[in-house]
Length: 570
Image (cartoon, rainbow, N blue to C red; front, side, top):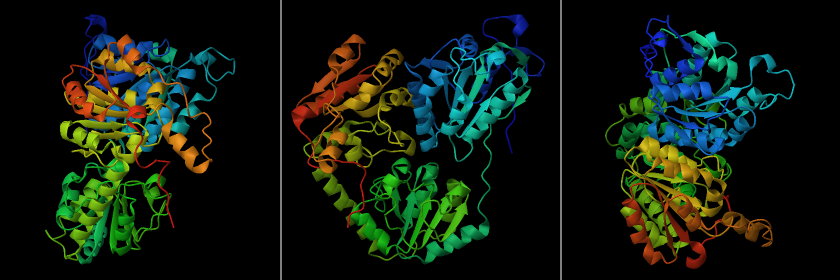
């Protein structure tokens, strides 16, 4: 049942004639109504770029003083910030853009939020309604903007009239928060934003419930698990709230492997866990012997299944809140449509504390993990000790945030442990350059906790302006910049697949020391790995953000050249 909230909001500027009541009789501008709705939806921060086409809303947010608005330097950055904020906080992220070109700038970041399943509300402007959709080339108008937003969002709406605004905003928030979650866009013509309307008396933002799996389905799965000798569970991002029940299954003898987005649902040091080592040859050998695989909340994405060539057990059960997931990537024995947390809770209640697994199974899990870790450690030399130092010094509750860069693909996505599913944030969709703005949003959600952002020089070059936002916000962020002076992964792919013809991958890289000096961002360069422990310890003591640039051109490349997502080998 939905929780109904009564609006009881008062203007902070003392304008008595516009005092808002909870009776649904007072009036305010649409901007003021939206500001209050966001506050009652639990939003304490929003991101984006102010413009003439969103001023009525942002002016209302500023006057109310309840929600902190964090100005990004670009629309894509603002959406990235809202996305990371939503992931770390576990609630709604909000971003504002202007219309036309500005809304288009946000499209890539919306794709990232859609891929990651992040509940983000994107509010953008539109030109005045008398000129809308007339094809007059009115300044700032983008033909078919709403269709563009629909293509990169879970849903998109236009608010045509003031009286419909409150209802559409509530609906958009509800859709964003309803599993499978994702970004929802609203475009609002500027004249509608400034128009007056009545405040709603009661509002509701509760997500649409996922119909529960039946008791018979749960019992059928429990019976399979009770009799399995080598059962495993693959945990994806959709299982991030199932820590307790998933851990109970692991304690009972179920082997655990996770997607990158499902890391730490079960602690990564658990003896039955492979962590995110999900495509190694040892993992394949375990799957080949596995007599039951439960896939919970994972999309089985291409880069985590060897482009769908990873062999899953014949007896595979899928649990997902989205009915469309049934057989979408792999065939399954049967499919349970339901919330992963609910299904795994009910499943864990039906199995004994210890199921009758093959007594050799735990040792095989441990050996597989140890072999894959050892191979990874060898492949990332000479950076192994630096990574160990980072693991040792990084606070246990820190947020580990990663952009697309060689270091993340090699070790950041799976080797450095995190303590909670919401402490891991990465560019799920594989788009470069999102790490710096994501760090700002993550830091706002993390509060006093530290955010460590692993980025590359190419990615930082794409979002240099957002460094200023980090400084302005005094965010507790340590930027770990692995600088190989160009698009390193592209060069590696060119070496392997294109006869070492390195077209366009060697680019001019800025002097990051000078850039940091220009905006008062604490900076340290590491040219010898022996200097890393002191550099990181110093950064931990900073009152605001800092950058540690690791000069890979001086230290040298890793032993293994990463040349794209892993592929099946014969």
